[in-house]
Image (cartoon, rainbow, N blue to C red; front, side):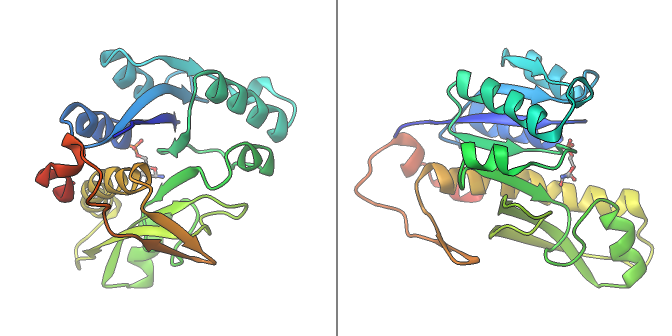
Length: 221
Ligand code: GRF
């Protein structure tokens, strides 16, 4: 099976990037990361990539006059590196139509709540304050809204009475590290069909023969 080529955009710690790297290295993900790009020069995600000999690039939004100009810089870098699928992994900039036109239905994001509840940024405190009994995470296609694109996978976790942001975000992050790779693998296998707002997950094509596809551990990711 062909490996899908990824470009991962980060702004911070990059623990989701690390989980994707680990799953690729474990042979669980039919993907290759071509480039990791950060808008923040100090992002630890860049160090994680370098530790695994993955190319990195800093494209600082502060160097651009407009969001479109910044996005065009990102698109150029991603295209020059042969990226097919863009992975937003804690990337703290809003993507413009300039970007989405260059990668139609080829940009994924992970959000630390069960969308459409709690879009935006301070989502763990909002979930605690609202009093929900479950929260979780969502992998979705990116569209022109903020956290509004078609949902691929969600995972739920309980919200406990004594939770604070640290404990809840840690519980959710563990699930993020599982479902992001799973969603990327489904995309790589060409099993995601967008029908309006819904994303259908198609059955595995049994005729494809590949060590990745026949690896039973794949379903555990
Ligand atoms: C994650 O909680 C993700 O859902 C959100 O930003 C955080 C990034 O964490 N979009 P990391 O940089 O992958 O550790």
